[in-house]
View (spheres, rainbow, N blue to C red):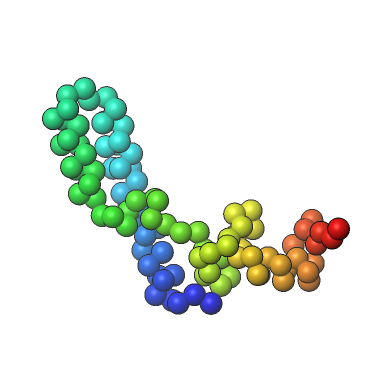
Length: 100
């Protein structure tokens, strides 16, 4: 189980991302349309003044049961060891253990 503080930090990042996503998208689109280098620098400065945690690249994918941040499968939203346990106990439809 992940620490609750780490899970709360991720939730804070998600909230900040939603809050600033429209402004970030607007500024990035504006950079492409401007031809002057000075104007680009001003827009880039405005973009850099946004909170760091509002960037979508700072978010981590976490297991929704345990909060584990590593070895997650996107299709299931589970970490590797929970995926294995649930597949062995037939809780995931269509997933079978492969043997060769």
